[in-house]
Image 1: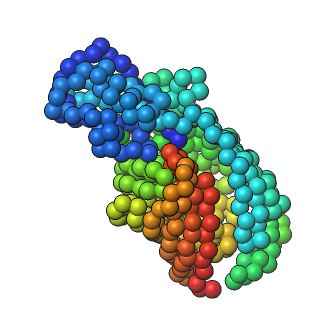
Image 2: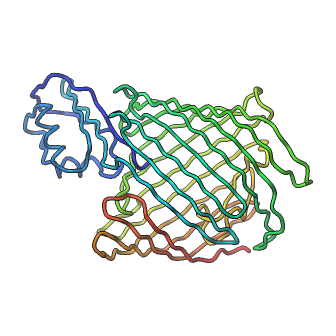
Image 3: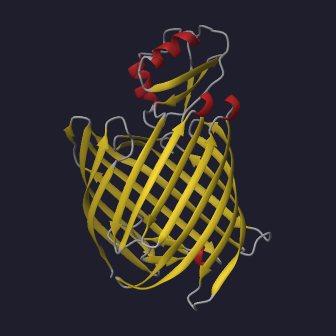
Length: 370
């Protein structure tokens, strides 16, 4: 996630030339950029304190820790995003939502993050809160807890028309446990304890509990800075709902994103993904449309499996003081409900300087078939 921080243990200062360097916690700036801007040249011996001071002069980080063992240097940083409050609005396909998101990093001087969100609109209420420590007690362990609440309607489409809306309620508690095996490799194990009440297509209501476990890996390094991306990241996962709950199923998939080409302010970013599950209860089925398949209404398609790829072509940038405007083209494709679906269009992204994600996004496009 975009606002994560970093930490590291300090040992007595030693002066060695490094043969290997590992940087943890940087999600905006890649390793080469950090080293270039800081002026660190590892052909020249530097102490831990000297490296720390050079990194702090970049202005990128709120904290830096450096540890050197032999010829290997480990650096853990916390990028500067101490807190934020973000009201948001979304409209399209008969849905209008209003929401407020907030976050705070480095609670109590630790590497923890708190994120919260509440959303109203279109006869729905959605809320979530997450507390997560990426480097628990200055180690490479990840611990966290998330609460999610939903009371909403699920749209059922016939071609482009909403023919019915079914009720859906859910309350979810998730326990997170993970470990940074390397700067570009994380393993995490999540346990979900959920209650669900939802309307079936026969107008009957199903109610029960779900206890499931998800194992996933984050492989690679992906950096996003004011819309421009570098690197790649792949996340394969497997989730199994055990016999402890009312619903039993399994699902697996893989999410990935990659900066295919970057030259100046021209950037091609692709995001392929695939998911499969069996036998999924209705609330758990995969939904595509809206931001997940642009050119189609949100929840336009629903199935137990799909394959999809999204492509963003960022063309250039226009600067207006502290605001950046990026025009872009998109091409989305998915195979779901036994047919290929293509969405093409264009959009504008508005960025504030030094903020990785867009403050405003406006898209217009058309979805083929139907």
